[in-house]
Amino acid sequence: MKSFVDTNVSIAYMFSIDPLNNKSMSVFKEYERIFWSKMVKNECKQVFENKRKILVKFYKDLVNYLKPENFHNYSFNELKKYVFRNYSRSKKREQILSSLDKFWYNYVNERFPTYTSFVQAINNCLKDLKHLLYCRKEEWEKNTFLTEKRTEKYLDLKNKLKSLNVHSPDDEIVLDAHDFNLRNNIHLDFITFDKDCYEGVSKIKEFQFNKVKGKDDYL
Image (cartoon, rainbow, N blue to C red; front, side, top):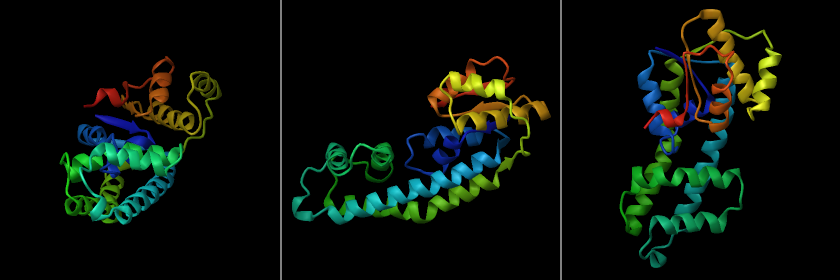
């Protein structure tokens, strides 16, 4: 079985505190070959560095903010309140909030942690973000395959994608997958964890993917 994956699938695999990490791991295990294009790889590099920078700074700031004398009955809700108090409504806050459930499950896993155990949990998470994260990134890149460069523009399909709320760079990524599938005729699955992209691609009959899969296809 072979698949072409969107950027969000690879990012979810690399970051253990990404909310879709388990789903991406299932994708990784399911396919004998996973493909991505140069555009996906380049976007992944950019998203990876930005996401890592935001999360490392957040968890460093959090551990410096905490004081043992004020740490009483600290819960997951208190952590969320801290984020809402200190971060304005932005993509940065969205990145942080999306990491909290997996952070708590992976590293805290207590209803009311002690100050010592909570600080240790943050430090373990930071260790992952500074070191283990790169091991998963290397594993992903080692086991995925780069497609040949696309030369066709597929303007009609691009316009159809735009009309269905699939915008750049997602539209170009889908066309990379479509072009690769046409050239090789390998019954390729296209996988994206983006809802608009999944719904848009699913509605266009010209795409000849074996299956179009989204995040709801994985536990």
